[in-house]
Amino acid sequence: MKCRTFRILLTIIVAISAVVITAVGTVSCTSSSLPVLRWKMATSWTADNLLNSEGAVAICDRIAQLSNGRLIIEPFPAGKLVGAFNVFDAVSSGQVEVGHSWSGYWSEKDWAFELFSSIPNNMVQQEWPIWLYGPSKGIDLWRELYAKYNLIPFPGALSGPEFGFFTNKPLRTLDDFKDMRLRTPGMGADVLKELGAVPVVIPRVK
Image (cartoon, rainbow, N blue to C red; front, top):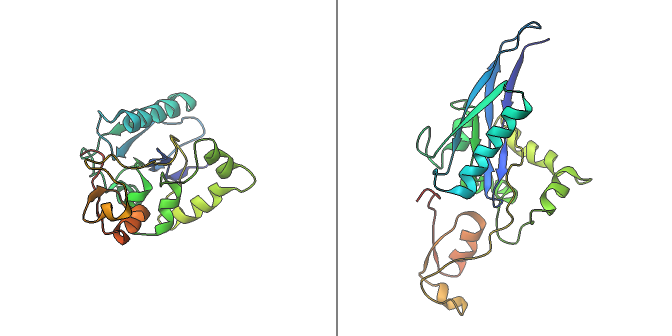
């Protein structure tokens, strides 16, 4: 069996929060013995963020099961290996093998990254797998985008599009957005700026 070098980016769409999972590893092997691979997963979530952190744990457990224990991935909370916004670069550079994050966090590299995430009015859970793996082959477009950064994306947790804001004052007209500080990145932030709001990018860990 030929030795293989694995360079994998698992991109997770959690909400479809973009979870981005990525994995990088080099394996030396022979036909008679195959080693147990142990990789680290950097995430953008704290342990108490159950929606996302438990999703990362579930993926690691499933990979261990499907590989019969030959590929063990250990997830780490944000800040343990890298910061919440640094997962993409850490995996792309080979600093860690796998990442679990939200692709809107690196939309400054290419706005198209955010299309594969949980932006408002995007696809719901049932639509994502159909578009990715059905006749449209959306997965090919996704992987073409990430290939520029030596990463291979895979979908993970699918929780649908984001739906709005929780605010401490009523929003009844567009004028009510003026000077309001709202936590949102990417395309949503661009729209809010046009309405006079002040978008703030804060990781989920805060």
